[in-house]
Length: 347
Image (cartoon, rainbow, N blue to C red; front, side, top):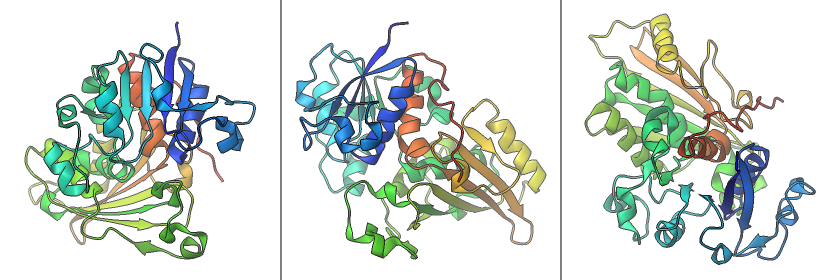
């Protein structure tokens, strides 16, 4: 089979590095170009030394990629930057997976409310497909532009969507408490991500207004068939990678609920979804490290009447690069597990 020529635009961050690793290992993808405007002229392995002798491609400017040179583009660019590239490249004969938040929401108006930037390509919202394969696989298969979900929303939506579709919880009672490793903040150091601040510490941020809130609400709202408002609070863990989310919701009074029935429902719901594992014991972030798995542990507290779901992912994999590869597999009619058959790294 002819290999799919692949470019990674903005490959010098953590997500770009993971994308390069996965494309390098993928039997159907060929890494044809890697771009960086700030490191142009260097080798990729100069910026990410773990790739020495493996991926030594020169970093080029995105403007050097010509029409017809690649079949697939991963945009590993910041929010507000990706849209410029999609606007310029959407008419080219290629497929795009955008890992920024520029096309995840329902409209440019909603985007501009939650992201402090005017959207320069509003027509892109008419074509973009939300890239969560467990929910939107059929749409992804026919898409030219896929908006890769955020890391927090991935962990939260996979935990709560079965509860919404199965009418187990009262949506107005939903609370999602999430904790992420520091790589979720990107490769550029910030005061809050310095070692001296993160080490031996733990804090909440983005309280009552984190931009991932609306992404979670909109996708769960689609499942519910009406608008959902929920409480979402993110926290920063003193670890390098991984997300653990705990979702809480009050069971519907008309629903007879117990732990066994709930777990059986989750297993059936995700029975044909290869990257979701419904666990018998609460999972930890190291049990999915460096893989595309999302491990879920649903349970029920009969004392409070609350359903609780623990969800763990690797934020750089299932929360970013791994999910992007999963989407690309679907877009090019490949087996969805191709290149992602990875065993978690522990310890």
